[in-house]
Image (cartoon, rainbow, N blue to C red; front, side, top):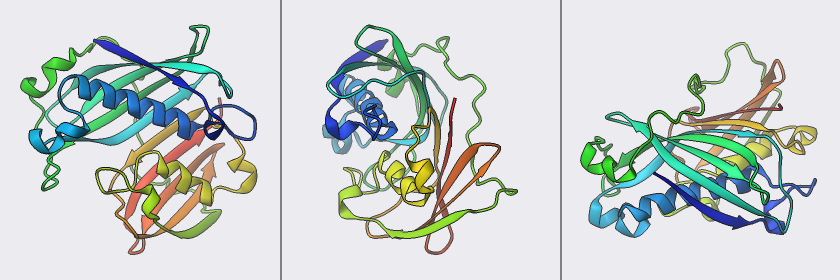
Length: 242
């Protein structure tokens, strides 16, 4: 079963080139996924009564072209498939003419918000999504779990988590990781709209944590690692042009 939602691109959603940013695009994808969860009784308002909330483990986004300010986009999403521990969700993003402007995929796990325990995914939890296991977008994707061992770190910065980054699950929101990544990227790369983006979330980032953000590149692919003060890796972001 697919659901879709339209979004207006405001000035807060564009970069220096007047095109929608990856942050804004990821927000639209996340919100549409939340809309789908809400439609089957697993939304934000249900998390403490159902003892369930969804946490992102991975994102992959491929942008074909970008819309600008004061344009409308439509995000279409569907649950693909799941196993005991994780569920895959896919997306198509359409521009105002109905043309595909981006594809995306995400991996999610369900947890009990009271104690953080990972929940087993069962037909009782998943059947209402009416998954489409044959509608696969990125069948061969392998998300990076670590920074490349052969890569030289070209820039490293230290930052503290602000309260404004914290979401309803009491940790740094998914899309705020892109803001953290920007802090480490060289200025000339920060102005680039990377049309291919992958994110792996390994550990949640809590309020007021001290972070070290490191970046480097291998064969034109930029990697950003977000580390805690005790050198634990929280997230890996992989970004590259077309």
